[in-house]
Length: 216
Ligand code: ADP
Ligand code: ZN
Image (cartoon, rainbow, N blue to C red; front, side):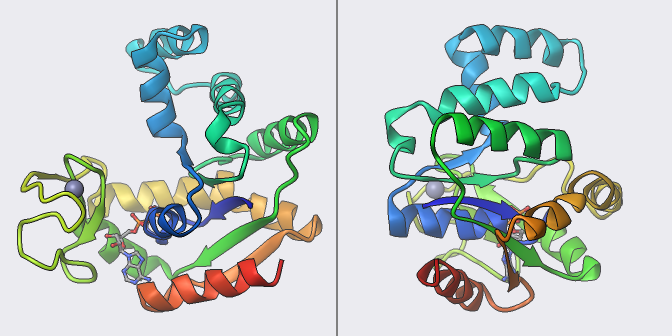
């Protein structure tokens, strides 16, 4: 199963990806995490990314594409993967399409998570993650069973992203509609787009994604 999760920031991509990882045993590929890992392990691409990041610039499509390509060759991706946060631009969508064709790994589906903007702002402003294992939580929608203790690993340390505040969310949403939303038409035309109602409760969204996967 080879999936792309597509939707605005706060739509629930990370939340659903974590569940898909647990259920299907395939990795979640987040380009942000992959960039940090490539820099840490000092691969050639990692060294190029580090120079750009140290200069305070955005990592180019070329570098991100190369990192994804390297990652797709790892053994754990051979049974499938979930791309979360990539592709973000039409250029990246063309690049991943060419890569997957060359590797003979066609996409199974692109799951679109639809959520209204006002709800996105509330979700992003309330989200935080376990500092140890990365499990995602929300002040109202998804609290740990025991307050202040991670359900998954028992850690009591949590963190919030600096850009998760109502002001920057509006800017990030504009970037999404300008750069990423055109991918919806792109994948619709390829017959791959599968919309789900991201406004529903977390378990209900999971059930809708399960239905999509069962229909493939
Ligand atoms: P993304 O990865 O798309 O940016 P997240 O998965 O981080 O989004 O979700 C953003 C926040 O909204 C998280 O705090 C998460 O717990 C919460 N959330 C995710 N899905 C839902 C949902 N269906 N209903 C309510 N809250 C949700
Ligand atoms: Zn944890």
